[in-house]
Length: 373
Ligand SMILES: Cc1ncc(COP(=O)(O)O)c(C=O)c1O
Image (tube, rainbow, N blue to C red):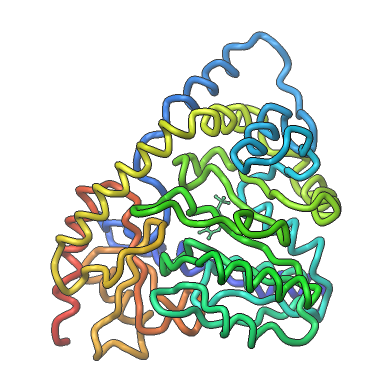
């Protein structure tokens, strides 16, 4: 398939498409964005940058040294490990660069199902073939299922923990087993950990806690409440990063410099910023857990903003149609589980990240749709 055909075969994400045509005054529980203000350290850094009477240069392709060093410290890397860090325009650009650099046409890419839709999209864009693997109970990484799907010419495998949309996690033994299997199979393991610091209970594990195999992808978009900065990163083996750096340079030159300075301030103030994130999350999650019984989350997620809620029995098989009704008649935007893969049928994803008052109102508007049609 030519690159042009690959591009025209892509379709817009259903996550965003659901809000197109929504009635006026709809409550948006669709997009997964933090609904509280940009934390103060980032605001101060942006103001400082704007006040400087000096040229605003591009900066190094791989990120400004202050940020590279802050990311290294956050991931507990040695001081001389700058070549293990690559700064990108959000984790989305990190994933794009990794996929384009490491997947050749016709190769297989393992993606979680249900999972963040960009994984399958990027696999196709690179000419690869997405191979969905099922998750275990509550969306947790299930080693056996992953290993049994890891067959054939697999270029790259993605794990996402805590996961979007289910909030499922990955245990240390599961991470170790999956990493060992990918190493043996010669597949690049990409661990998407953007939700790692958005958690209610214990801090979830990182792939880096068990192995140096594979790469870890993250960003300031979720935990540090700064999606609009568009700053993310990859941490891993310099030989894996080298070709991805070339792709990222070709795509964007570098992440925006003021954003990188703001991201540095956020990371350097992680203790305070992440404490606020947990406070905001606890507040929202208690609203979801005490809301109408019909739309209460079934499990407490390992992390993330999302409630993954089963649709009523009668709506199974037409989750998209059901979500359109909830939107058009109930004026609440939620995302059908099928946006995340075929195994998402029968579920809706409700983002609890936004304004807490609207979350309560949105859940109240949704609940009647869970009764008989
Ligand atoms: C699992 C996951 N990975 C990556 C991203 C991309 O985020 P960003 O590019 O803002 O870092 C998202 C965004 O929603 C996500 O849910």
